[in-house]
Length: 172
Picture 1 (cartoon, rainbow, N blue to C red):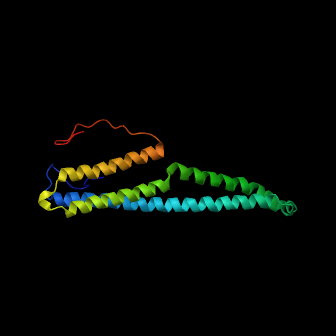
Picture 2: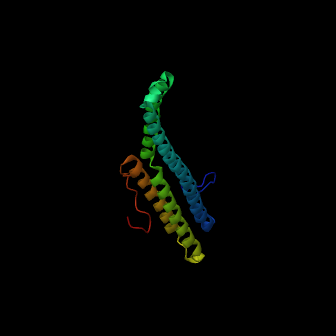
Picture 3: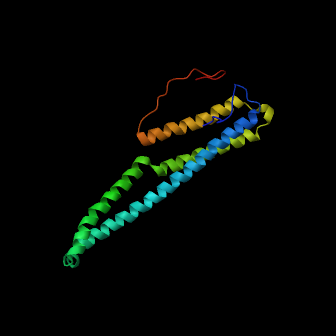
């Protein structure tokens, strides 16, 4: 998330303020775009669930009427349409439940707000009092926590990455 693509970093960062600020902006941009996508999918799939549910109810009700039984081609069409629409409804609800776009949208928005708050705190701190290592630890910690939350939510599993050695000047 915080990598700089196309830039040759040799361990030295000339403008640490710009580097940290750009890292916050990239992370915020990622969460803004991901949130937008999740919102679109959530609302689209909710609409399709409601719409297809109503269509299944309507077509199955029509198929059961004596009026339709008197029209063989319509009776046959509805007999095929009901299970096909129900299958699409099942697929839509399954996708929605498995990918959980609603909770992903919420989490993306919360993390975007959290990152914006941290970015604003960083920018409000006097440049000579800024701790760049701490800023990157905060930023990466927020991103890592959201990533773990995503996999917990979607895969219903915990992530246990290998333990990294403690960073200089921090406790782990």
